[in-house]
Amino acid sequence: MKWLNKDVLYTVIFGTETPAGRRFDLALILAILLSMVVLLLDSIGSIRAQYGPVLYWLEWAFTLLFTLEFVLRVYCAQSRLGYLRSFYGIIDLLAVLPTYLAILMPGASFLLMVRLLRVLRVFRVLKLLRYVDEANLLLRSLNQSRRKILVFFSTLFILVTLFGSLLYVVEGPENGFTSIPTSIYWAIVTITTVGFGDITPQTWLGRGIAAVTMLMGYAIIAVPTGIITAELGREMRKEYSRRHCPQCDRSGHERDAKFCNHCGGELEPQNISEA
Image (cartoon, one colour):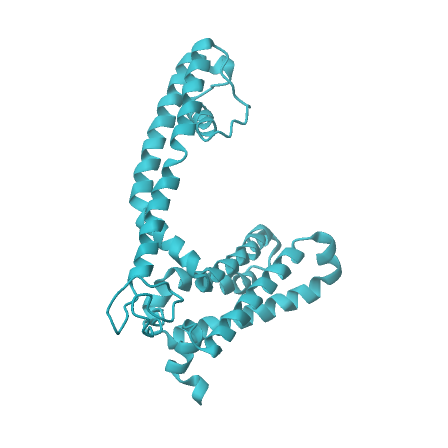
């Protein structure tokens, strides 16, 4: 059959350039959103008490639908192992696995685990990222900036440890700073400008250190934003430079452009992304 052909399935499931591929993506997005509505309604006690059986069978219908989608993706993927190890492959598996695992844990002692598995169905919403180019662009930007962000958080950890230790010495247990971990907790909520107020310094020296901590929080809170913004701009420039005009070989075209902005020649359609 035509629809069982791997190339045809790959074009429809992984591609968005064909009408069939776009219809498949729209149908799948609608199914994901509806499954999330079912999950949200199932978490409301009064609705679950009245419509529990209906919600149960709707959940199983969505689970079987996403299971079929997952199997088809594995079947037609150009690299099956690559797909299973990919971010989206893991998310696709998490979208269906909790419902099946809950069957194996029907005992009363496992009720908390079953509840957790049911909540894990919220991972289905992450499947939407596949169909939003801007979300994929943001994910690539975060991946490119991961080392800089790691260095930033390492520095931040050193700072909160330093300020927390200072407050532990200056204020002491009598003012709520009962241990260094508790003092580090205070430093974290202070430097992130949250400031719960459950622990506050009482001495003038402690308040001075707290003031420096708060000012430093305002100074460094924009650092990760700048890092991600810079990588996001770099990725956006890459998106513009990937498409070349077959007539003049100039790059720098938008992703949805159909004609070259230099010579007016028709651009080739973008390639289907790899699985």
